[in-house]
Length: 76
Image (cartoon, rainbow, N blue to C red; front, side, top):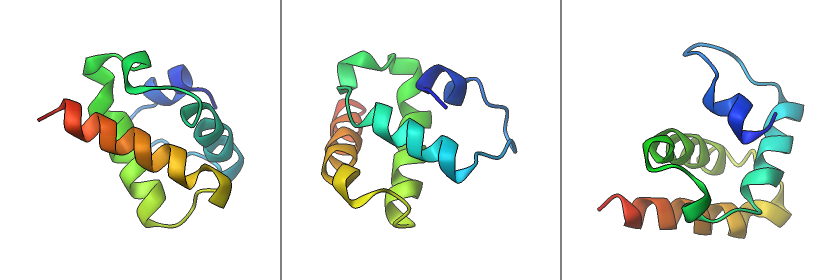
């Protein structure tokens, strides 16, 4: 699943582990400036959940955590 597909998901729609893994890999390669301001809260919610559940590949944790922190700082 890519970012656009994720952002178009309806509430209650379920993502598979394989889709989450693909999304995580894509998110790990972008910066906060690559995400529309209106989409940042949804991305931040996803990242916080994925990181808190330890469901992210260890090699991506630092990049995703950094992206989450940047989104949170931008929203202040």
